[in-house]
View 1 (cartoon, one colour):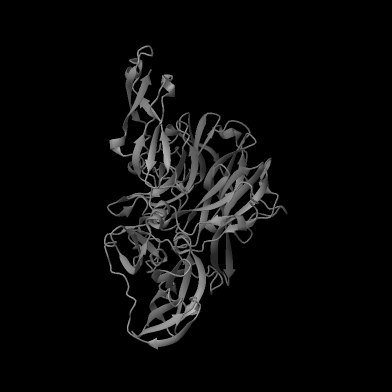
View 2 (cartoon, rainbow, N blue to C red):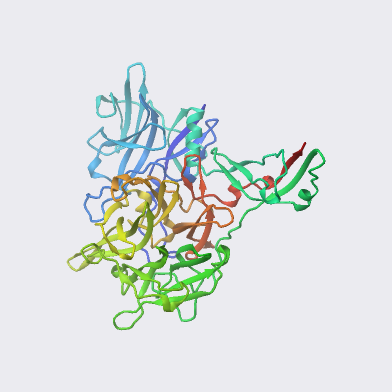
Length: 626
């Protein structure tokens, strides 16, 4: 038997103006993240391990129709988890960030879950005409009813009965009988409830919400003598039940000592090969004369936003957000591309000849032709539009790049009228070429600009003219949870990670100004789906990487994926923010192996320490000659 704690966190923190002087120190940003249901597991009911790095798992959806253009971010306080008749249920109080929600006054928000992983909103259980706190419930299997208790803002406690948590009856003021959990040992926890769960349920939760960690290594013994290069890889086992095979540098002297004509058992020693990616990754200096754009980190200082790495014809190319210039680094080896000379391949100029800003340059190869997808920003950020540059020769030759062409819809009009488009990416599935991008409408109301949330759209393009859409754009994602609306309601930077028929599009969400709050989430579909149908795209309701994922790496976001040429592993190349004496140091490049967990999902938190324990790195292979 195991135990499960549901809880919330205070959510009172803000990012002070001395760290982010461009931002107003408005309280409540962290409530978007912390006012959600968190979970922690325990084997003894006393010592609990927080799941998901002590971040939320159940977030209420925002209301995009509530009051303002951006909608209203909803939060959840006082989450109380219980086992009911046909699954698990959560009662909590929905809020408008740190304020009461007039749409649910006196109600408990009710969620259900068959497996403690994904939750469905059942509706509101009306309990009072005034604000309530700490709703709780217990299920009586003998009567088949629920006992529901809550407190009012005035401090009174009430009790009622309910059949299916849709309405209550026999309400009366009474002493509390359903106790909340104790504080336990989870940092910052405001506890809700503790319930008993089975060992199987606990293992399932861990497999979904704890980063996999290396627990053992196995190497197959051999009853024959293979070629040296065919000696086995090491099978690394992880806490969630997943495995990963790693190459081994075997001892040539041990191998050479094997006499295939003499029976016996021979031992070949080896050391598992691990590629080390430091953070921050050091970049080569930017080219002389390169200019940055206010609000964007250029490459001159070693900062880099939105890194994108591709391989083409045996060369590796790195592009990014580069200020006024489109800058490319190129090298024969992946590990050398970051220190390779930075070269300006194109400078975008406006009608008057002045430099024009570019955002998030990505190189894509379509029908063996290189293209750069980027954003062209001739003025303030409210002017950026997606554009494509075609290369008629060598990627590294500035003279081979043609002038950018703005992306247009089938009717020939620009992609986003009355707004902005940026962070466009391209991919091909079953012979069809798609683009995805971040699209944001900006409303002019009495001379003042009001930006709407930034959404993700998809469309089909003409592969010979990839700036030309041949289908109408479809919205596949809007920022709806506290974790992707924190301080800024933004979804951006989509990039495809494919594994077989599984299509995972990684999307960056939440604050762009307060870079520490940037997060990564995943859209998922199948290669056989109609990808233009928004309903086939599943948006996971929790973040896959946050500032809590890996100590010292704040605000991970806007990434690309590349195959490791040595191992075939998927690698994520992203930017994150290191701190020095508590002060953010700007966005820098990071690289990490993507681990595929036991549930078939990409794990983006696989640090070197989790990937392979030091005591397992030295291995042996027994070769039996009979």
